[in-house]
Image (cartoon, rainbow, N blue to C red; front, top):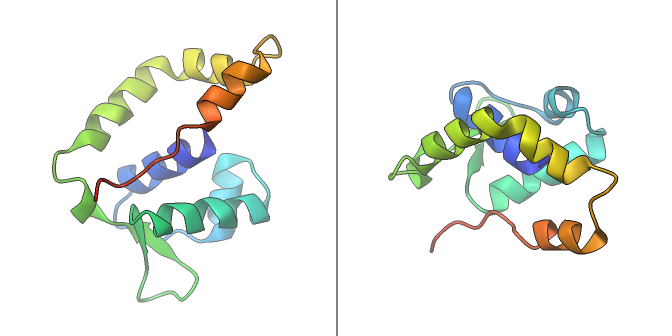
Length: 109
């Protein structure tokens, strides 16, 4: 879920340059995990390194020509409680978590 939340943060603020510490604070994760999220999103070309700040990233609008993130954003915002509940509930089985973990954002080649 933090990867999706980070991507939505970038998408909703496309002109902002984000650094690890800001992502860590906004997503309530430690700096190491925030760094991993940034590297994952950059590796899949969802975000790009910001030229004006060596450790910063910004949203790469070029990958989303179909505006799919707009639909994802709307769906997430309408269902955030339900989605968070599914992911974070103590009653969720390991199988459900493993299934959710199997999905990773991938850019269509």
